Image (cartoon, rainbow, N blue to C red; front, side):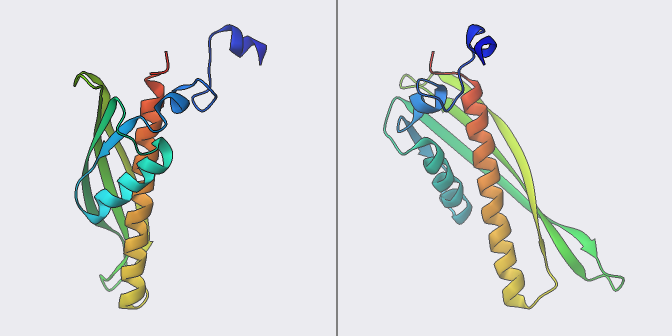
Length: 146
């Protein structure tokens, strides 16, 4: 542990780390959609909701593809693939970081129509959580606490 402290390593979620410095300091903008609401909700959970000096803009792209077929050609499982582009800017509009994160989730389509729709909704929600968590991890790597 002492060796890590000597090298200047500070955990992102430690007092004074990037996570602590950003908490409640980021205004988050996401698409106006169900998926946009879900990813924004997770980002607010992780970063706090604020009107501070930082602005995080997020864009989303999702697709659904067949992942498993029965011998009769019926789709048994779907993959929901997503990408989120993000940009973090400061109060002056200077870009501090940005990029794209990717993830996927899956769901079974073998139950009733209601069960399949519920599974699809859940898979999309899980996808937004994955994408938001990856955005936050990338932001923490920027080390804005310095």
